[in-house]
Image 1 (cartoon, rainbow, N blue to C red):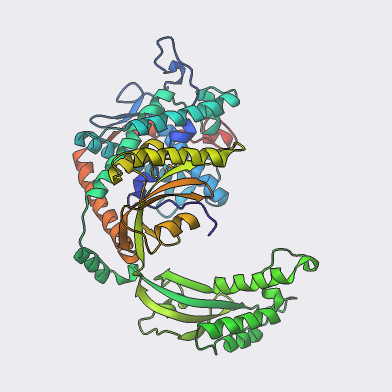
Image 2: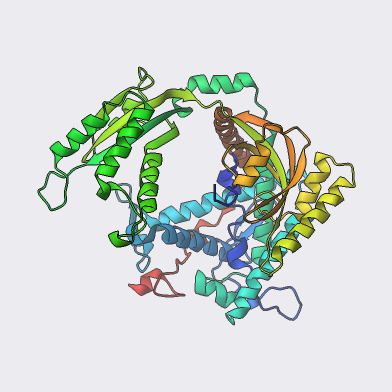
Length: 515
């Protein structure tokens, strides 16, 4: 497996994934006034708010300015546009005149406004909960926030921009470094409390079984092979006629098991080389090795394992039918192709084991001797742990202090319920070694650096992980609704409706001005 470490998606992803939403884009090189406060008075919002001082949102202990709300809404627009392009809306035109849902008269401006309101409400509610619980940001978290500012200060300085110029160039509007620092701290505290609440939920095996039995289709999976013989009913040059595709599909459907399916598919592909994807379009440069690799890749692509339940089309409905048996095979005409499907393992719940792991990552630098320096640092940290009490608790403390993995260096280097194959090869092989015992430790080298490993023990089975995530999502959702009633968040909607979306044609000014 040749991939970097995949970060585990927490059940709290709805908040945690956005917890540092504004950390990187905004930290910058702001001008300071004479009193050294860091606030640039020229950036104070000109929009009058009912709460005064440019404040557009407030709760008992927290405030968010109009400036920050305008930035957040523009950030969400830009992120969406960067991901999906102009297929949904035209960023050079007024979003208030483009419909997200025309039937209900909901514009794209309305959509992003609601997204921003919901996002900020969630942050403030969880921040209030964290404050009430007595949570505080750790020194490591404060240092990470400080480093994010230093990084962007450097980028802004290279572009000869002030903070205000940098923000206006990217998103429009006005916001100060001081405002960003405050919303960042609030956001991280909200993330921490969100995770604190989620981690407090406890479930038994009976809870898992009950959730599974009541929602089986949410958790079952299936293994199958599928190969599609595409056809065209037109007489265009190079197209495969429908009757020819059907003949090939029927021949493959004579297979009685996986071996026969793969054997016939290999023969078919060798006899029909144009159906084999090759690394180059130049036939003269294609080697036999390339051709064989293309066939292997096609057969691998036909194999589908642990595919979740789906009933969106006829093929899936056949695969997940209750009466499906091992080695059932069928030809289904769908989407201009004859799809040959062989079920190798009908609907089941995935009992694969998972494991928990703690690690401290020392990344490779860019120096010529980067490997040696990273190894030296890893050895030093490892020895620091081994010279102490060698407990999981002290390992977690060192992970928070030293680890360069942003996905785990605030929670003691912990990844829970990791499935086999989810991590890079060397990392995966160490944690899933059959001889692995609780308390084992070692240094493992991967493509990105050296990992000091600590094995705390096994996790849940694969199906239980999915059930556990769903239970936590449900419970955190219910808890959030209670918290919204307890910690009220007030918005100055009249002021917020004045938020200007930066268009693709203008760094400042309203969208309407670009029309």
